[in-house]
Length: 305
Image (cartoon, rainbow, N blue to C red; front, top):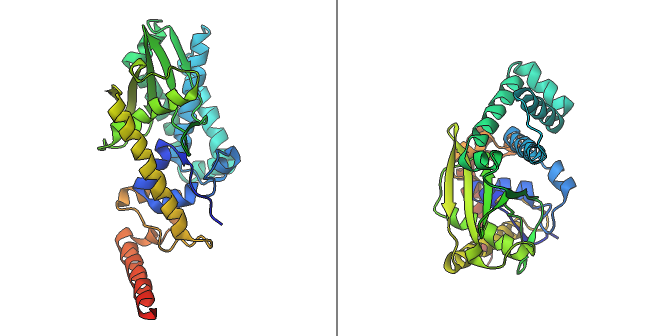
């Protein structure tokens, strides 16, 4: 029997919107609690691996900086290299180097540039020169309960300026802006209020997002209020209903044939499940075939009644 969804995160929401099939394949096996083994066993694209490494190295560098240890450029390169080699694994690394000899080295250089640009943003400059003195990195894998939903939406960084608690999320793979991005970001406030270690008053918070897009970091700021937080909670509820509908649509046999495909071939290009997807030979063709299958099933049910 398939388990109903109780978990929500921005990553899960993006997957749900970009491609329901990818969402089901990636997340339906670990619906009710965070399981590190399950997450590790899921197929991860090279982009996913890069983001994991960037976040790990970013946190390690920040913590060292707090203790007075300043990394050289060589140290940044070494940390990124070690992290990427570990996450990709020996077999994966051998395949990359055999087919694209310079790709791995270029990937490290690209990641290094992304981190250097991050350290040049206003918030990170203020941390580096101690103008922001009270700050802490948080664990994204820590959930906060919100009714029947576990929210996995902790900020990457919390810092205090005067009486305001500032919640910062860092998006290493910034996608295009969407209509609900303020409500997505404000889910961090709901997480923080339920966390227990942060204030439970809405007006104590400010929300910041740094999004890497087209080779530069874009900055967004959101001021929460009661109405927006309520809308954010409703967004979570709606998402979870859609997630559960997909799980139920699969049925006990986990039939993927009627799970909707992506609406944009852009998301197919980097999908780690592409090889086994009906859309591997063309998204439009696969969607037409799926529509015909669903039509025939509905027709059969109608005629049998």
